[in-house]
Image (tube, rainbow, N blue to C red):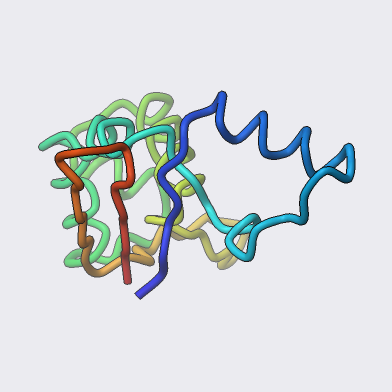
Length: 125
């Protein structure tokens, strides 16, 4: 499972400035992906995007155009959504015969929510 950091933008900015000024060392998890909040991630996991991920996993389209036909989504909107899912590590692309072939790169998510603070944890694999 891959760990992902949940950290506000302000906290991340302050941490980066302190490291740049030499006031503190970079934390061990400084290089891992981070989200502003669990809610930010969940906003990307709409029912439509989850169906899109399932279509990629199950039907294995060989291009974005084929995926657009399979899902009935407009290709420009689909490309934008795939870019967001790629940015968070849920989708990756392989180039085959000049076509970008989408594949899923996540199998599951585990979210541990601390109800008393903002110390939520997220793992995916």
